[in-house]
Image 1 (cartoon, rainbow, N blue to C red):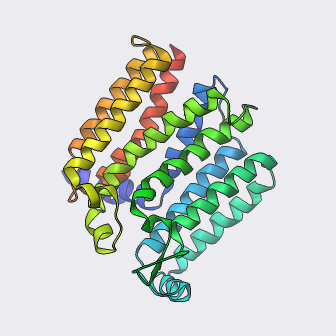
Image 2 (image 1 turned 135 degrees about the vertical axis):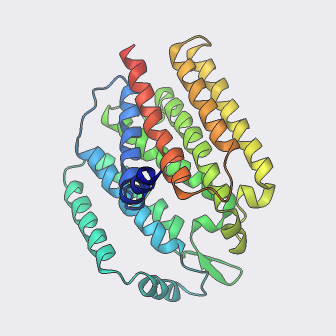
Length: 291
């Protein structure tokens, strides 16, 4: 037991709270799309950009998430600076920015434009650009839009970028099918986080799915989305196809994780196990390719 506690304290929690793990998750989904498009996958400038920019976005999300509703954008940024007066954090952010700016010079123009588009949505999600009930907040204050924005941005970064790399039209069926599958995948992984944040979101007046429907009905929504994913997969690949069987077992795992999701669960349940499904999903697709 002591060994497990030390593992959590000195390895697992630093890994997830430094956001390196979520960076690995986004990179894994990028490679998963490579596998689905029958492309060779390796470490290139695009995947490095995805890795470091994911870390940066999640750091900013953490910095901004702790700020209570304010009346003006100026008040918001003053609170951010006051609550995050940490030299290590600032050095971390500056280092990440330097790496990301360097990588920008090596990206294709069309791919860079897609990253910029995803970045604008990501920052609009966090920054106080909206005024609701005399307080300012980001797009995530529109609770029902929150989860869809997350799924949309992740799908752009991990699917559309790969499509552009391989000269696949973003309006082609091949791209749209993968985009829709990834959208559902991210959606069903995000629902447990909304359940975890129900109390906080409700206190801030954010009408997320769990706040509006309750936890039980929210889980039913997730089960319905998982069923939709399964039906869509069967329609695309057939009932007894190995890809369908792999997706089916992933759906069962996510359904179980949804069932056991509670507001009181520890951080590693969400940040390691649920987020870790992205890496597990990618490994499974790689094994399917070997078959």
